Image (cartoon, rainbow over all chains, first blue to last red):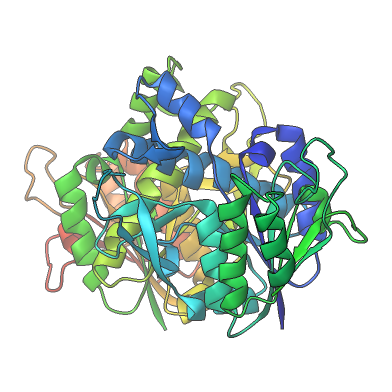
Length: 257
Length: 257
């Protein structure tokens, strides 16, 4: 059975109209589907209003106790519930979840090495039985970027990671397409030309593109993450803007082994 | 099949240790169970920090757009997810829900008569099929005091009402005991004596107590609400402090028709 897992990031969530449009398309997608969202700048803005300093190291958020509270309020509360209510308005029977709900995503607090990331969670496993049951009941899980350690501690977890871990965990039961929505139309051959989308990348092509320096910087870990999922039985990964989930969409990047 | 529905209020949620203790007891309760919680003062405190004025009329909150955001963050986010994570630590497979999740509780925005309550929701119905499916899957629903109108609008809804509507809606499928936890040990014969708990109240006794003025003020609508549930096939209602859910507890008020 097919399952689509779609991850949306800050650029979609921030724009109220863009988000609404995306949710209409998402609601119309046929078959089993799961949505994963972050929260990003909304959390930073609330933290600023509350006088909580947002600490970042190397682009990663340091999640102290106060920041975790803000994230729990914004990701699991404000963002998640508004997405769910909006999907319900479009006849998509959404159910909002953190990894603690139904014990769906177990994680552990990232061990302190050089940097103490605070309440950041690295995923240990996915509760595939419960998620499959929700899907079988006709429900569409909407995950925010939070997990738990099974000992009462909520943890902040990267949304890209949650999406790929869900895809890997559920790949034994479903034929999975994993969609990463971001601000560009796909992986670009020429970074200055928005329409120079590389339509298909496989392992061989990836090596070539990386060697030639066409895939570089932030795209390298993104694609490493995609191939990690593909090596763990995920059927295919698609990268593009939100229009790629529309029926008949053609301009985005499909990645396979 | 038996189902226990337990509503906890602000007095339990506010005290971190009291809440933890209650959740240990709740996790140990046998059989199907549902938890319903409000959020109260935490939301008021966050609103104050954010410079949002909390408007109350006759003890009821006026839910303007900003207040609804605060409530969504605190009720559905911070409070709900921490309760769920804590229950998971005690082997209770909790799943946190607003009425929008799984379309579990449908409501409409309260019509404006003398007072405009803003985004306050009056319950239209309960999605018993989805809730029963979650229970059958071994999950324990944890409802925050929010509903939705099916058109994308989240609504603030009284937690006592949510508990009784859930009880009424599910009474066709389950033999339901509805527990209202509050700060006293039960309905008191003598308001100045905390131990003067009336152990059993039925319709006849209620009329006597109301006529004699022993039940008055805030207890009157509370008990009206209980009898409303009993008249709609809820098996029994219990009122007391959180210790009433402990095995062998005896000092609380049981209400039947």
